[in-house]
Length: 228
Image (cartoon, rainbow, N blue to C red; front, side, top):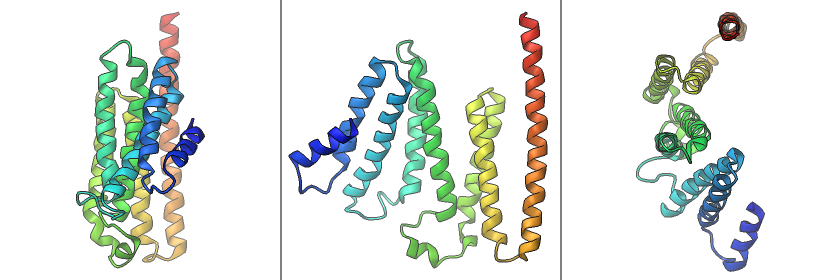
């Protein structure tokens, strides 16, 4: 399908630099097929095509500028991820489309958390040249916001028993903390101390995770016994 759309685009307009229309054309094609055959994989391709269209279209509208409405790419996709995640809730309310909820929710959170992590590293700067000229300490706001939102997602996941949100929050909270560790201490500490602290932290997290997994495994066995 992707190859067919690409060749179709080259055939009808060889001189166009706006590839966003090809991605947009792929969205209804994948979307209709995914809905018709109840294929979560094909539906996922529709959502990835939608994300590709959003990125290329905003770039084209801004005339290949690094900013669109004052937002760089990571900040744009934070907003896109939030919108897609909220939109996924609508699928859950209808029986005919409830099978699309989990895939849409997963990909919406994926867009959001990856973009949020990149935002914590690069801030709202449009180019690498601008980013090289600033200190990582000037990105405290974005780094702090990212950590707070990941922690909030983790707490909400526990509160509402949302395993997907909880796992996303926990995973990206750890990724964010280790990213800050590398940013702030890689050049400041002696490498022996740096890697010693890193190794100890891995051991502590692994030990804690093992206890949690063992506890969940025992709870699962108890539920199975009760059902029997």
